Length: 267
Ligand code: ATP
Ligand code: MG
Image 1 (cartoon, rainbow, N blue to C red):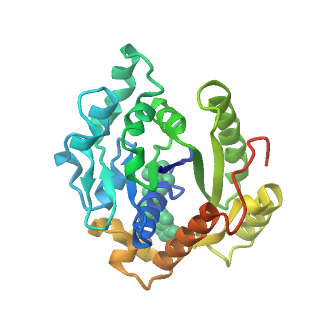
Image 2: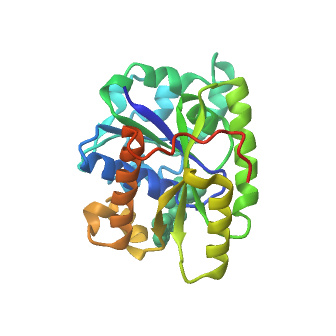
């Protein structure tokens, strides 16, 4: 039965999509059956997997409004994992869902039927706390929070934790934080080091030991429609995501015990 993980942070440009695509590819590399769900109308995860987003059809949009089945919509990528694509049509979902019942539960219900086919289902959420993100958080068991270690990061994290608590109280009682991931890390910056230490002291073991460095190959890979391990496997970025996949597999195998973060933990 798949673990369903939402990659989320309402802050834009923190590395959600880079993490969702690369982690999917790296988990697949270690033999895991993975589905990546693109929940963002920007369709960046779709493009990053080499799929032309304007030609992708049906997409997660048709799933949410009940006009397509998962079997018709999930594509096999050339990188060993499946993709449920998205494109700008998804921006209309917010309005289209208003008239539909159970609107926060539509993705959860759609994934229920295929959960047994995968080991991991990862969702790339948009940079907003909208109905699409709520659908992701309701469908998820846990969330992965990528963040840049910069001045406002901890403040944003407090807001996110508060939102997760609300979703947990009203819509999804099992939701937990899976882990916090430091992205675009520049070890030479004193501020980065400071924020990183603060994060560790508030969230302890729940902060992934793996740190994703700022690495130009990670930024270049999507323009070739490839995850970094397929673009430049030896790059520091690709190696870091392989390491992250191993860390997550270890956690799930119960070998390295961090466990989910209690939502009570506040930065
Ligand atoms: P959005 O909120 O718009 O969905 P996001 O959180 O999904 O953004 P990404 O698209 O993954 O963030 O990353 C933002 C930009 O930073 C992209 O151009 C990406 O290629 C680049 N990037 C992400 N991670 C790294 C990294 N570790 N090193 C260098 N560049 C990176
Ligand atoms: Mg994104």
